[in-house]
Length: 316
Image 1: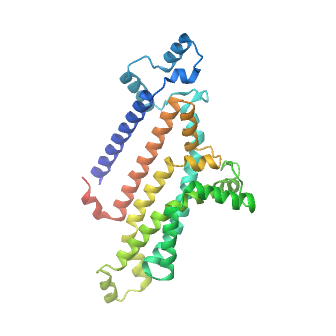
Image 2: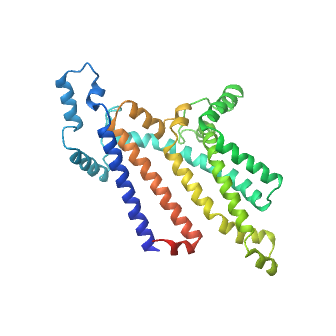
Image 3: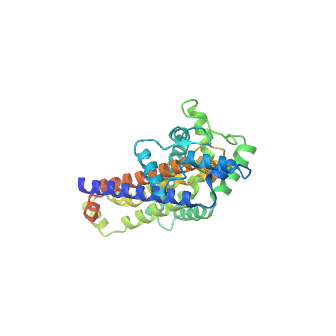
């Protein structure tokens, strides 16, 4: 077990290294001089050269990367030119918003998917199964940004049940925080339900039709015990993996939703930093999102090994 965990952690660090290298090189070799973009086309050559020295653009690319990487390893992600403060401080303010939104959306998607998916898998071709298939198609086909606008128009502008936009910090007003994140979470959860619901239904259906279910009938076990112990235990491995992947995707894919609802999260911060060419902030946000995705995937692997000990034998 320890060997498998060590291997997974090493692979996670390797992925983070590759992601940081690719992000750094792409931003450095992107068209347009960063110093000129910051100062404007009317800036004098002397001012541009001074700005390049301040940004460290005159040193070799390899030296720039390893200098930045050394700071990252010590917790120093650089200074944000746009906010005039350390990048870690800027990200620390935006990260809780995206994390809460992702957790909320994933929880909603899991509740809906588990409820309908388990019922549809246990009762194939029933009305519950038909509803589950409709929800699957709806979630897969509905663009999140369009659904977000429709939810905003109906529940905020017409019914006035939820705020139109903005974010209320959790520590200031828990109920207000939930209200401000409900519509964005619903818009994100709708897309995740399409994948999760199908995964849950197929997993339960496959587990319920397995040959081993005949032995439970011979033993005279109750249906509730069969479902809880024999069907769900084996059927929930795939949904756990899928839920982890979906949450990892949400952590780095909330740009449109956060922009629509004016949420000060990582997605909107990344968009702003790219528009303003704040290189240190862009790199900081990218490496934090990559680290979150890698961490979530690592936790999913550990959970799967705990739920299904036989999976350890398949690990390298």
